Amino acid sequence: MITHKTKYALKALMVLADERAGEGEALRIEEIAERSGAPKRFLEHILLDLKRAGLIGSRRGRKGGYEMIKEPKRVSLAEVLRLIDGPMAPLPCLSRRAYQRCEDCKDEQTCRVRAVFGGFYATYILMIESLTLADLMEDSRPLETFGLPERAAGE
Image (tube, rainbow, N blue to C red; front, top):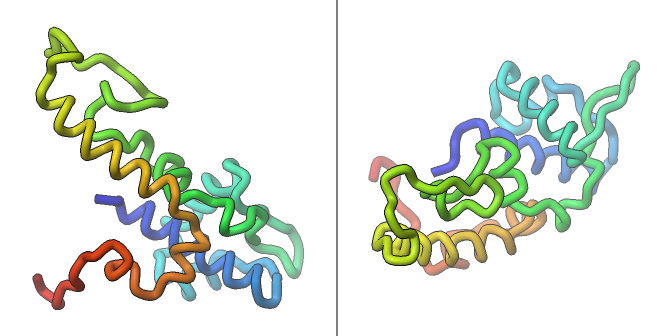
């Protein structure tokens, strides 16, 4: 599952990318919060992380605020997930960027837990690495894309 923080980051990025495609003005944090539905107090930290990563920029002054500086089609969803939540691997021994040998593992080559989760993770990582912010913005029916049924409220 993705965290609320990542969800807010993605929603904020969609708002900024939409503004980039439209009027192209910088948006104040209050405007981003209102349009994205993300709490302002969370956005302050999230936007700083996104800015440090070079996804968004900021302007000072009367017409200041945040703006998208990287093209949405060049922002991988995996990049945002890693930036906000850290490594995505279900086990530390599967992570490419934060690899650590599992303390209780005697042999990674024969570890059944690693094998099963490694197969799942490989499929997941291929999919998430190929999706971009532009895909997220364009696809109004993402569940259908992946053959997943929509859930009724409360399920």
